[in-house]
Amino acid sequence: FDFVSRSVRHLLCAMAGAGSESEITDSQQQTQTAISQAEAEEEKKSPKEVGFYFWISRIRNIDLEHQVFEAEASLFLNWEMTAAEHAAYQVKEGSYYNDEFVPAWSPTFLWANATLETNKLMGYRAVKKGDMDYYGYVITEPRVPYLCEAYHKVSGQFTIRSHLKNFPMDSQDLVVTLEMGDPLEVAVFVPSLAKNFDVGKRTACDLTTKYSDLLPFEACAMFVEHLETDYGETWNNYSVLNFRVKVLREWRIYFWKVGIFMLSLSLASMMVYSMEIEDLPDKCNVLITLFLAVIAFQYVVSGYLPHITYLTLLDKYILFCFIFLVVNAAIVAALTSIDDPDEYADFEFICWGAMFGVFVVGNVVFSVWMCLARKREKLKASFDCFDMYQNGYIDEEQVGGEVNVLKENIRLSENMKRLLDEAKFPEFGQVEGKKKN
Image 1 (spheres, rainbow, N blue to C red):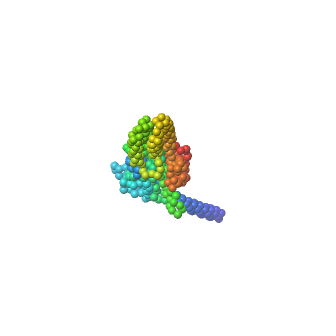
Image 2 (tube, one colour; image 1 turned 120 degrees about the horizontal axis):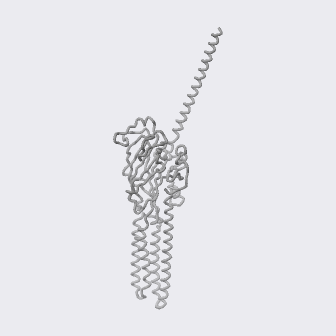
Image 3 (cartoon, rainbow, N blue to C red; image 1 turned 135 degrees about the horizontal axis):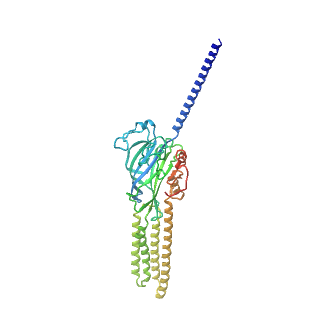
C-alpha cells in the first residue's frame, strides 16, 4: 500500500511539472511572437535604406549663356534583399549583371535638373560578404547579410545657376540633383551598404577629368549633399542628393585678351594732351575711335555671358575705361575755350597729370579688387549649399534644408545623421570640420 501511494504521488508530481513546463513554453512562444510582430511593425515604419555611389565619367560643353552643361555618369545603388531572393539570383555566363533578374523591391528616383538623352538600367546583382562590388573590390564587411545592387548609366544636359558677379575670377557649381521617388517614410538615401577593404580611400562620388572638356574651367572639388524636401505636413517629403562639382575659371586668358587691351586703350586716350591746340579735329577722331573700340569689347564680352541683371567685375572695369574716355573728351572740349596758348598749356598739363593719376589709381584699385575676388571664389569652391545661402549666393528655397558636414566629402541632413549611428556606419560616426576634398 505504501509503495502504491508513493508511486501515485510521484506520478501526480510529474504530471504537474509537465503542465508547468508546458505553460512556460506557451508563454515564451507568445512573447517571441509579440516581439516578432513588434519588430515587423518597426521595420514597416523605418524607411528602406538605399546606399549610393555616383561617378561622373565625362563633363563637356559648360554653357553659361544657356546655363547648362552636359555629362555622362554612372549611378550604383544597393539595398538589403532577403536570403530567398539571393538564392534565386543567378548570373549568366559571360555577364557581370543579370538583366532578367527583377528584385522584389527597387527604389524609384528622378533626375530633378536633367534633360536626359540616355537613362538605362544595366542590370541587378545580388552580393554578399566575400563578393566583389561594382569597383571590383572584395566586400569584407557588408552592413547587411545580402545586398541587391543596381547599375544605371545616364547622359544628358543638366541645368545650373551661374554666379557671375566676380567674372572672370569666378567659380561655378555644376550640380546633378537626384530625388528619391518614394517618400521619406518608405526609402532614404544612405552611404553605400557594401563596405570593402579600401573604404578609407573611397568616397560617395567621383569625377574623371581625363576625358572631360571643362574649358575655360578647371575642377577643384566634388562632394555630395544629402537634403530632404520640405513641402509641409500635407505633402510627402523626399530624400534628395546633390552631387556638386566645383570648377574655377581660368582667368589669365581674359587678362591678356581683354584686360591688357582695355588698359592700352585707356592709356592711348592720354595722347590727345600731346597734340597742338589747333589739332582739335584729330583729337576728336582719336577719342571717337577709342569709344568704338571699347563698345566693341563690351559687346564681345557680353556674348559669353547669360542675360543677367547685374554687372560683372569685368563689366565694371570696361565701364571704368569708358568713363575715363568720356572725361578725357569733356576736358578736351573744355580746353578749346582757352585762347591764350600759355594758359592753355598750363591747364592741359594739370589735366594730364590729374587724369594720369586717376588712370594709375583706378587700375591699382581694380587689381586689388580682382585679387580679393579670386580669393573669395577659391573659398567658395569649398562651400556647400548651406554655406552659399549664408553668404548670399542662393536663396532659402534652393537650400532645401539644413545640411551638415560628415567626413570629408559628404554633407548630411539631420535625418541622415540620425540614420548613421556608429553601430551601423562607424566610419561616418564623427562629425569633422569642413574640409576641401
